[in-house]
Length: 298
Image: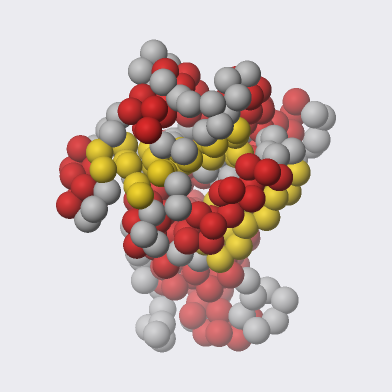
């Protein structure tokens, strides 16, 4: 296999990089948190700066908080491209705007470097067990090189289209996921306020059309009052902001998503941005004066 660099070892990136390491990949890692880097080095990875990764690696994965940080990491004074080799492929798994991704593609293409935007879905649990879904945008030849590495980190990987298509797909994904959580939250609060056990409601509806992966993943966290983040409201708030900016630029009205963004703004004011996005239920609980609980949860 090729030499691979991985930049960003947070909630998602850490487990993804660990699955590459478990798969026998020659891995060099980089993160601002030196303790995370040291942990990977003790497990067999190499340590490197962004520039060193650019110089030594054939493939570079990034998964970072936002598009500005991605741009700085790749193109800053001591970034990946300070010493990158022609023929390298950069794959950004961050959740950014399609415009961010297309800018990276064009700037790297001028250096004879490939670029694929490949954000992921599945949250921390699927990052840990290697069953993420990759939604990719870019050139087929570069996707084909990356596919074996996607397979080590995920259960599916699809090239959706040209540069930016992966990021567009992730924005669509975030609309569906977060609105699903919001709808689930309203439903649970209704059940609780009416005196019906939310867990029994879940068991009754999960096999019908209301059932979903989101429901199965997030409802147990709600009734357990476990808002430790697998995907923080902060990250999803940023993604929904990107959704709205992208939609407005191409004249797509998103009335439900706009309301969702304001709900997330309210969570920001209430200092809940570090919660898992299942914690959106707390907004609806406050409106109704009830807490979603169950004595029957398994």
